[in-house]
Length: 207
Image (cartoon, rainbow, N blue to C red; front, side, top):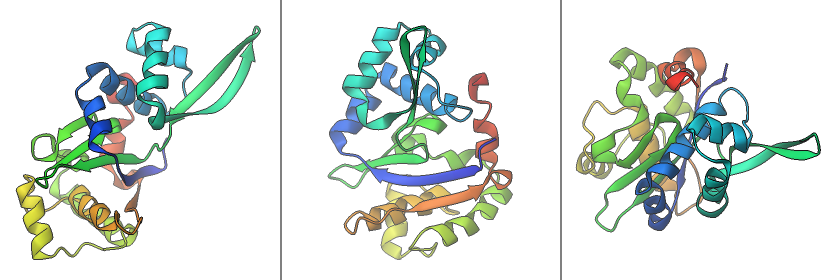
């Protein structure tokens, strides 16, 4: 079982974001890869089989359009054929981007969340108040900016459809944006027994 919910917020450019979110196959490849890799790294063929697609179709998307989102973690030779085992390049990553109007967009493959934050929400939205309140302590410990928001930051979240009480991911997103110019990332580690999202994610679609 995974050690817990580890979240690392990473910024991607708007073009990369659009190339994923506007393409159903790429979203499905990422979602399935992240879910399968919770157990063990799959081969490209196993990923293709799970998706019900041809190997070459999946391999093309991985090599040409999604190259920055995965890596080879092991190789084995079976009957003269080299098998590559792959995994997300950053299994804990939640990717974000901003438009010129300050609208925040999210790519969270494991949570199957792709789109405008005000419309798709965050992985924490399915948790009860008791559950996400407990997780807030880990945000304060893991993010360099803690969990105190300024009026401007609250306004930013409100603009993006987020209302009080804010969830752990809301605070992590603000923290990550503050760290872009300095190169600092917001990384949160929540023990698995404390993270109801991870308990649900382990059985996503039976993966």
